[in-house]
Image (cartoon, rainbow over the protein chains, first blue to last red):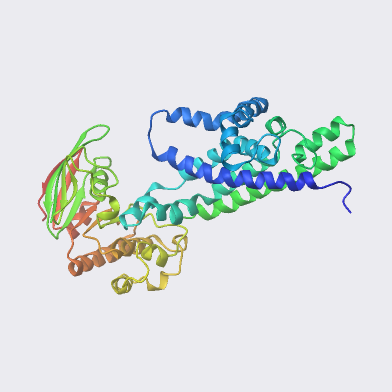
Length: 227
Length: 212
């Protein structure tokens, strides 16, 4: 029998899986747009995507509260259109994870697309194939190893998010208590054994993710290098 | 018939091309960086001229004041230098990549026999030799039954025996298919052996040479 209530783990996994799914779709669309189109304000858009890498989590949390709070523009819209609140809910935690992991995934996807030889796409075009099919059957499969590495990093970053999550989702046991929050509040309460339990759980997940990414990269380098 | 008359500013010079080509084999010779590959890329639609006209069999690929014809609609077979085979697809998947499902592929089956690659179809690019890659890439370029065939240094990675064999095959294909073929080479011997016409390109300017 487990010594502790495992709900923080399930909640963290739910938050990280959902935020990673959205990060995956958004970063593919953004990387595609940024690598192929020239438009006014492009560098500003790129700076905004990457900004969470250099901002303190509290600033990100503050920005999310301003946007998604009960009186924030997006908060009002979501409440009116879909009838749900972001602040003090697990959705807020997922949005915080999304914002902090998007730049990591975006950088990985850009690097992965850069590695795809443009001649492969051009030769496919000369064969009369549509841009969407080229993306689906040439660009994406050949960039997949880099994209997957980015997904793992984004997932790991999302599951470990603390500062912004605390600000927007708060600490409500059983509702918004993710593993990082559980560690902090167990430590605050002097329950070192519980804090250590969650530290070991999340560290194991991190080690497993990084080990797997490294293994995948090595395996893939051998395969792609042959052509 | 192919009619080419365009200009394009490159880094260090202006590329000026003007020639007409029937169902002949044209060799482009000249030193590296002289604009030969850019000409092929302009014909394929990968890059566009600054001004002028490119016309193949009455279809404007490029014309001043008009949107360039999309690469996908040009029906150009292009064999890139180093072949650019898709590394994650087998030779057969490479060749059939642009073929819609259910299309008649009997001409491709015949090509694979002519080029002797039927035994390679299940193999990936990293499992076959340079000469075999070249033949797979040539079959792929011809699979869509193009109106013109562009070859960028098609024989550069081949040893003498393979080069001779590939050149013979190219001549046979040209005789059978009767389409204009333009190939870039730095070996004047290849140009003289294969081409009906030779154009020398140096720093963007072209001059026609007499085939001996």
